[in-house]
Length: 499
Image (cartoon, rainbow, N blue to C red; front, side, top):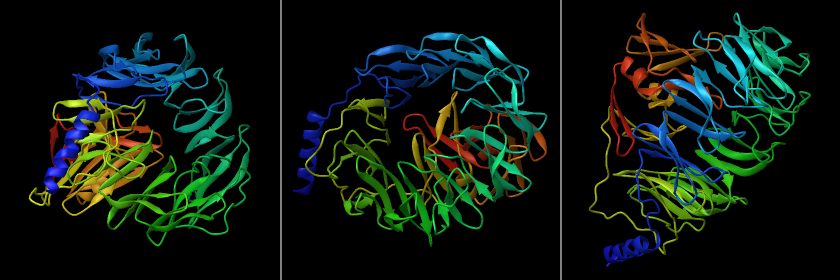
C-alpha cells in the first residue's frame, strides 16, 4: 500500500510540477536579479530569459554574473566584457580581468602586469602592478615590488606601498599587517586601530571580526562590542547576526553577543524567509527565529529557502521542499540550485534543466529494498554546485561548492587534501599554497599558472585564484599531483577522487 501511495504522489507531481525547459545543458545557474540565467553547453556559455527563451546562444568560453551593468566574458583564452544580455562591448584582450567597480575594472596584460580600464575599454591606469584589486571606498589595493599600497581612480598613489600584507577598504577601514599583527588604517593611511590581532577580517555592518586568543567583534574605533569571546565566529555580520561556536557546537548571536539561536548544532546556515538550516547528529532540518524546530532534521543536506522552496538532499537524491517541509518535487536529481523566477535549475541524466517546484502532500520515502550507494573507503565524492565532501564514513560541508571556471573545476582544496591524509600550508607574503602528502610536495601561487611538483615546474591548465575571500585551486591537477586518481561523470557532474 505504501508503495502505491508513493507512486500516486509521484504521478501527481509529474502532472503538477512539469519540466519547464525542453533543452538540457551541461550546467545551469539560477536566475539573477535582471531575470537572466547563465547556461553552459559544449563548454560554451549563454543566457536564457525568465521564459527560458535563448537570449544568447552558448558562444563564449566564459560568461560571468551581471555586475554594474557588465558581464566578464572570455573568448580565445582572453578576457573582455559583455553587457547584461551577453553582447560583447569590450573586446577580449586581457590575460585576466576583474569585474567593474566604481567605474573601473582591473585587467592583466600579456606581460603579467595589472592596470585598469574604464567602461569604454580605455586603459586609464597603466599596467604597472603585480597585483590589482577592485576599487572600494574610492581606493584600490595594488602590489608593486613585493609591497602593498593604495591608489585612487586617477592612478595616484594615496597610501604608500608600505605593507607586506593588506586588504581592500570596506566602510572606511582596511585591514593591514604591521609586524606580526593585524590592525586597521583609514583612507588617509593613518592607523586608527593599532595592530594587536592574530587574525582580522573586513568591516561589515559597522563591525569587524578579530581574533587574539579567541574571536570577538569590534566597532570602527576598535572598541569591543561583546563582553564574551568565542572559539570561532563567521567572518562578518549578516543581517545583524553572526555564526558563533563554543565547545564544538554552533549557534547564532547578535552584534552584542546575545544569543539568537542556542549553541546546539554541528553546522548552521543563514536565515532566509524566516527559516535557518541547522545540522544535528540526525541530519539537517530548519528552525525559525524563535529557535523552534519547524522541519525535522532528516536530510543529508539542506540549503536556504528562496521563493518558498529549499533544495534538500535525501537518500534518494536532491529535490525541493516548501516552508512546511512538504515535498515540492521529485527527489531523484543529482543536484538542485536556488529557485528564482519560479524556476529551479536541476541536473538529470541528460544534463541540467529547469523545473517548476510545487508542493506535494507527502514526502516519498525510500523503499526498504532499495540499497544505498556506499563509497569505497579510499574514495571521496564531490559534485559541481553542491557544497559537500562525502567519504564512506561522513559528510563535510564545504565553504564553497566546486565550480567550473573556463572548463576546469576549482574548489577550496584544504578539505580534500586533509581528507586524503595530507596537509595544506598558506604563505600570505608570497600568496603560495603548499600541499603535502606521502612525500609529495606541490607548490602553487595565486594567479600564476606555473607550479612546482616535487621540485619540478609544471604548467597549470588554469591559475589558482581568490574568489569572495576563498582560495580556489584546480582540483584535478592538485589531487593527481598527490598521487590520486580522479573520475569525472559529465552527466551528473560528480567527481570521485581515489587515493
